[in-house]
Amino acid sequence: MRALTAFMNGVTRLNDFIGRWVALLVFAMFVFLLLEVGFRYLLNSPTVWTNELTQMLFGIYAIMSGGYIMAHRGHVNVDLLYSHLGPRVQAGVDIFTSVVFFIFTLALLYFGYDMASQSVASWETSYSAWNPPIWPVKVAIPLGVGLLVLQGVVKLLQDIAIAFNLGYYTPEDRQNEQEDML
Image (cartoon, rainbow, N blue to C red):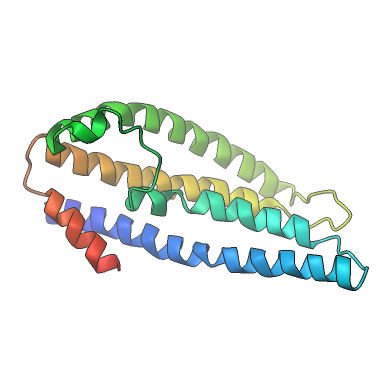
């Protein structure tokens, strides 16, 4: 049980660490967009690279943050009935719906890996006026989805422990994890 708990804590800490670093990309995107506005309207000299770079950074930001968002229960949830259920029933519903989650994310992982490997093999670029390499952005897809899948496994293990009242995880552990991360 210690190995399972260590795995769960390790994945959550990894996603937390990566999520906090990826969040800093917002500041870079902000600076690049301000730079573009300044060059375009103050100096009458627009750039060809700032918008494209910002889009690529946003793509990395979006895909790499999924595991962090799941670890902090930030994904959208329909609460009409769910919030009125007890913790064990909620965990049972989550176990049932995790099938859809894993079908989607594992398909995304498979096709994302295929797309990224083809992109790396050809050193793909954007074919724009600036023509930057876009293979690093495509490599972020299977990496980010892999982190999301791992956090999904952690969530499934937590739900199984709660639903079946197993000893390796309790809802109090979740509160302690959140306090440790702050």
